[in-house]
Length: 168
Image 1 (cartoon, helix red, strand yellow):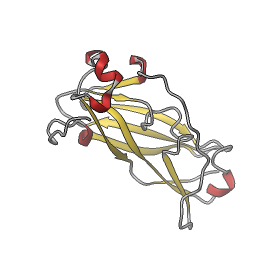
Image 2 (cartoon, helix red, strand yellow):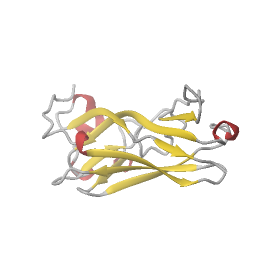
Image 3 (cartoon, rainbow, N blue to C red):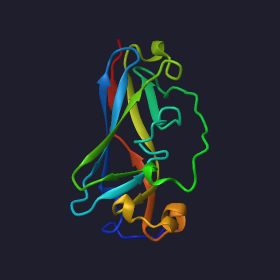
Image 4 (cartoon, rainbow, N blue to C red):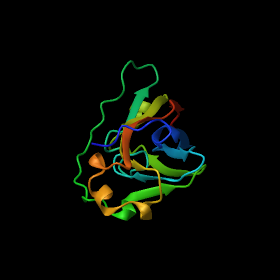
């Protein structure tokens, strides 16, 4: 199991996740940005199931609530088999004070356009599978292969801001 670290050691509290609408065209899209606000060290994030995952929408990381609705849309989700242990290219290093982004298209085969035509609130949330407080080339193969029991890998939750989107 990952170590129980103090907030000073754990890089996750220094990760800020934000959403911004990048297009109102049909289908609309949002940009998920992860900013490393840790002032002295880079972080490396396993992209799997993170805001930077290319499959974020299909994995159900986005909660989309149409304007006036009480509940988010019940969107289809996929299950994927991932390469394990992850490859180094599945890690994203973000230097201190910098950001990495992922454009998420609200594809019409997943998000029915008629459901969000009047606007919607979007939130991105989930669990970091692994975050390290260093560059990806400094992560040991053992830690990469089993981050859950590694003393230098951290897990935790993330949640973005609530974003009001519009669609043409």
